[in-house]
Image (cartoon, rainbow, N blue to C red):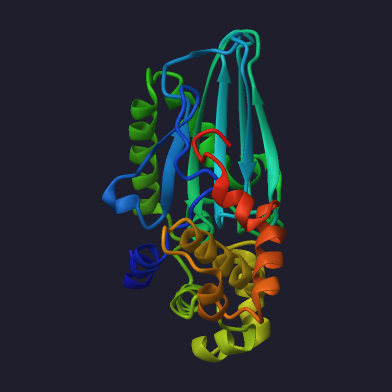
Length: 284
């Protein structure tokens, strides 16, 4: 593990639209210390199986959190396993989660945008805003981990099985994080998004074209897209604080004026900043 990746994880922790969300259908578990620079969290349904025939419907706002998820759902009634990969997104959407007619569980691994490639069989090209079978990018995980999860009785056991597998991949995987990408991301975070692509290229001592190619293969998004998403994420975290002041944020994050900040936030979040702040994060 490189020092740059550890610095990145300590400097920047992305959050969802509902950072305090917990329910009988959703829980988050932090990874072990070794995996923390790579995995934001494990999440899913808590128990061995959930009675999905119960009447429930949950509307969940998904925002650009600079993370990518492998989502595995096991339906015991239909004897089916559904596994998907949701790449990083630069736009928000509503995920409608509702009950089926039998018993099932969901388990997911949420990678940071820059670390998913380390565990993938392929690079991350064309993964921005994608929803596809996990085998498209993670065939080994699809083949080996899904079977292990069937024997686990709780999300804690599933997280343990996933950790054991991912740690083994780290030991044998030849692919590592790209230093130029990591340096560019860290510089963006240090500047709180007040940076452009040419400055990133100069800081990393590579050409703009080379940096764009590296971002496409290692993350699936362009440098400019990542700059904007990181700035939005840092603004969103700041906006949840009791002392948040929008006028101070305009200067801090390099917006032209208050209107620019508010419009940019709504573009990524899907709703206004004031509305997002007022929501009960546990249920919306």
